[in-house]
Image 1 (cartoon, rainbow, N blue to C red):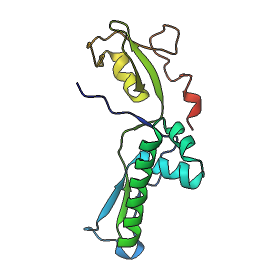
Image 2: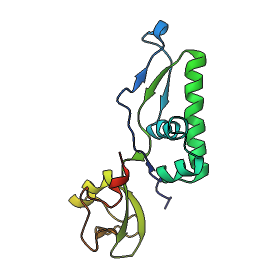
Image 3: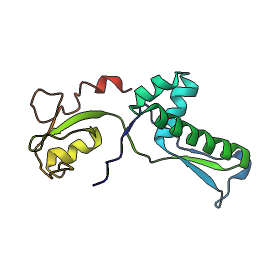
Image 4: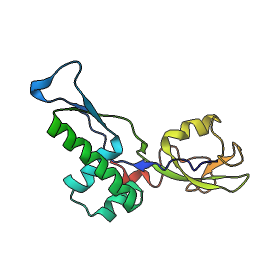
Length: 157
């Protein structure tokens, strides 16, 4: 079984998600799609002026992964400016909150996005190893889930 994708933690999702060059507003305009995690990497590094290691920690990824995300985002922005392409901000593999969870049957531990907690609470989600539905948040002292009061939620904006 393949490894599940690692969630990239973001603290900011922009309200404006489409930019078009002023002189070129046409229906067939080329565009670059910036993923939410690419915008977050650019925000942390270029706007907040944080060191790469701190940026990676805030997004809960490795430094190498952070650098790859940052480079991809910068390349898309440069291509849009140089070649007059629109920029659409959407999609990606991101979350606003990440919690540690555990399967009570096989004891597998992993990080899970808060976005999947509704599936878990409804019983529509199972352990990736043993398919058990007995999954609990590790930060609630045995309660099922923290229900938006996660100990880590305070770190999001």
